[in-house]
Image 1 (cartoon, rainbow, N blue to C red):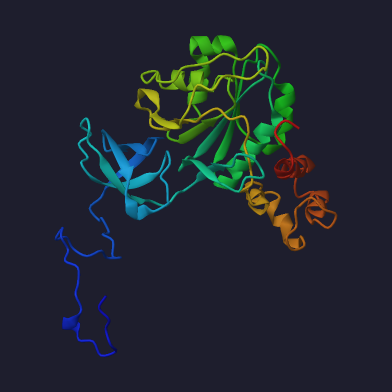
Image 2: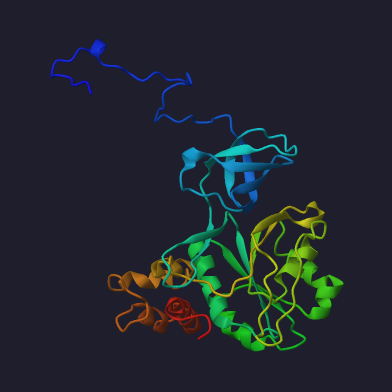
Length: 337
């Protein structure tokens, strides 16, 4: 082994030749200013289906993005083969800033945050009034996730021929959430899709709901030319539906009316570990000014909360404060409680 002294000349040091003849690595990454703009339609095992102008392009994430993942709804910069031809693969080199994010965790104790959808304007929460029974706690959690992520909620209540919607609508009336109530017959005749469509035109709407409530059937009716989703029946023993959607998928609204529908996998839990309760108050503009007198780090559900005085003075409806506190408490409760 050759040893070198303190005053070694550069000529005495041997260097290993670069057999490949390529350039040395650099920390300077290309800016890809010529990258085409695209939208992620779905993600499947590392392959991302994107829409670039009017072409569907298959792509993969570039290594320089590191752990940053692109999700359905993301606006991205794409380079490479953008022809959309079979067996071609482009590269996603940039993920643009997001206007909204729908996130969830597996449960409230799980710190791993999963982004489900990006850049959606609206969250349609689909729930059946019977078969399976409605789960208000799950609805509450979806509402909190919508408010936290910057999405406007929409309630879609199905199977009203089996149970009346009055009790559920009264529970959420103070929140001012728009809603659509449909029957099974309206689903078959296509009237349900027509009524829901009025809330979707010109917007990007993500659909969530646990299995068996009719979410995928509704999406199929809204985007009939796709028909890529199968539908499942409710298990007669457990009262739960069978998962028929395994990955989120963005679909253009039918009849070229403008707007996107994003179908998401059926959920049986909606963890809120990632939610900062202080952000939920932003969805209550009539209550938010009343928090100025709250003590630091106020949970808005404690004796010194200034919202009690604010409401008592007539600045807001007491039902609104009750709804806020119920939603804030969902992070402390399980969906089945």
